Image 1: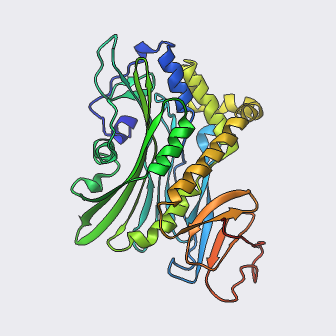
Image 2: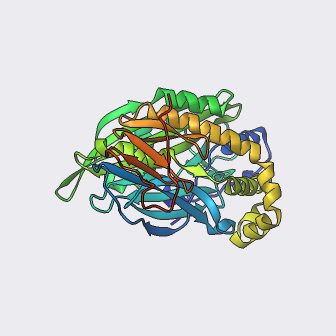
Image 3: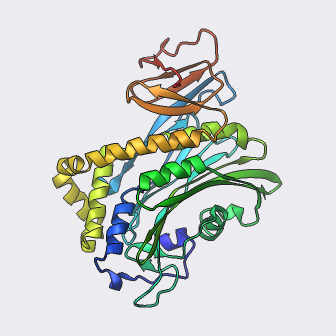
Length: 384
């Protein structure tokens, strides 16, 4: 599957690298592109099931996702409820400025309830073009398209024809702007950037079964002298059979808000992206060439981008906290091993974490996960 088919612009396949000039616009794109990174590896994984969400005990397992394109190092990790199935993978798109995407689904096998990470990418719109180009053209690694300010319209144009085909005959039943998230994202982007973040709820039928789906999208816009650079920096959906979505949203939110890029992979990704913007395109066409170059310079690369990684993590934590303010049924705890906040479903009296990054929530009197376990579980407290 090509990237243009993922993003619903199959009819626009033209590549505009003849315009690859090092202009102020390109510098602006590099600075902003560095702020949007997500990924994954092809696999299907089934974690042994424990208690379902309605049980007095709930367990989350840390899922580690490795990228064979970078010597099979861990690219990203996040929590999934025990018993849920994960499938997807890191997909690299060598001709686009966001070079790798997290394209993954996490599904509860009994009901089919699913968290899906959607593709993200950078866009640009030029007010004056030297050579006339069609919308959808790849210009300097970005998709040439006029800015879209409405979240539902963006979903309809770029996701419904491709990755969210189940919504083609769906009905929009609710829309919600998330201004606190948008404000935090705009502040992180800096300069004159503005952001729009929203949730759109759909209802549709699968056979005789009614379904509900919430799609969350964050769009960022940065004006320049030559036009507008804009991006979809975050996009995912929660779906479940009718009547279940609201109850499962806090559980699904935990998966999304615990996503962590590994520092090693982040450094290597940023290095490859630098090659892209240094016009070393031939150096990133071959996955083997990427792997060899990175393995020779891995420690230097990690150190080069360590400050950027730290700032990225701090920003992600702030944005996650703002999202959680809109999600009912979520509480924030502090992970003592990582010294970072984590959002978990509410309604449980006690929560524990172990060194492997697994969590257990319990409302059962006298329950102690250390009994009969080889792992050391530490009780964690809610953050104020």
